[in-house]
Image 1 (cartoon, rainbow, N blue to C red):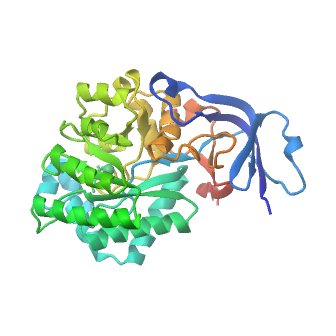
Image 2: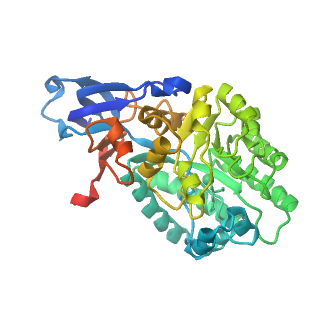
Length: 414
Ligand code: NIG
Ligand code: FE
C-alpha cells in the first residue's frame, strides 16, 4: 500500500536545485511562500504553493508545518562518527597551546583514540555511535559520511566499517562508509611497513565492498603527498572513490593531488595554496570545508570566498571527531560558514545540501527538495533563511523527515 503524506502550511520553502552548484550559482536558491510538499512512500511527487486540497484523499497523512520553513535534509559529508572514548584528558594541553600535531607525535591525539577504540566490542562501539548519530540528526542531518581510521589494524578498521554499514541498514539514516586506514601510523610500525599492510587491507575492502571511499590524512609528519598518492591509487585500483584530508595544518599540496586523482572531494583546505585554489576551482573535485575544526583548533579558516569567487564547488561538513571537532552541532558549523567563512546564507544552504550530496555521489536521490527525490526534509522554526544563521549557537530544527517519515521531533517539547 502506498503511504501518502502531505506537509502543508510551510511559511517558506528554500532549496537549491539540480545536481550541484558552483561559484556564484551557489546563491541560486528556489524559494516559495505558503508551500506544500506531497510525498508518496519515500519520494516527493509535488511541490507547490497555495491550495493543496486537490492532493488530499482519505488516506493522506496531513502534517501542519505551522508556518515554519522547510529545507532539504542536511548532508554531512565528512564525519568520524565511530570511535571509542573521548579526549578531555588532552584538553588542558590544547588550551595551553600545545599544537595538535605535537600531541599526535607524542603518542596522543588520534593514537589515544585508537587505543580506546580497539578496547570496545562491536556492540559497545555500535551503541556509542548511535548516540552521536541521533545527536547529529537532531540538527537536521539526514545523510552522512562516516570514516574508519581509529583501528589502524585490519580487525578494528573493519569493525568500524561493519558498524557504519549496520547503522546504515538499521537506522533511518543514510550513512556512507569511507576507509581511512591511513589516518596515522600506529605504534609499533614504521611508515613503510604500515603502508605495505594497508595495501592488503585495501584489496580486501575493495573485494568485500565495505567502503565506497578511501581517504588519507595527507599531512606533515603523517602521510606525505607521495605516500598519499600510492595509497589512494591502490584504492582506485580496487574500485574505491577518493577523498583526502588535504592542507589542514601545513600546505603540502594535498588539494592538488586530489585534483590529479579526480577525487570526489578535498577536505579541510585551511592551508591550501593559491595555485591549488585555482586548480580545484576549475575541477569537479568538491572543496569540502570544515569550519568547526578551525574554530576548535584555533586555526585560520579555509579561504571559502576565494574558492567560490574562482568558481569552485564548495560543501561544508562537521568533521565530527573526538580530537579536532568534538561536536555534532551541525547548525553551529553552518553558522560559522556565514560568520567566519563569509559565505551567504544561500551559499551555506547549497554547501550543506546539494553540494554535500554531490560529493558523496548521491545527488540524484537527495540534497534538494525536488519532484522525484527522496523526501528528506527539515522543518525549522524561523521566518526566513537568514534567521537560522543569524541566531547562532542554537538548534532551530523542529521536525525531521527521512524518506518521507517523520523521525525526529523537537526534544525540548517532548
Ligand atoms: O579531520 N585530521 C585528521 N583527522 C581528524 C581528526 C582526528 C582526531 O583528532 O581524532 C580531522 O581533523
Ligand atoms: Fe576529518
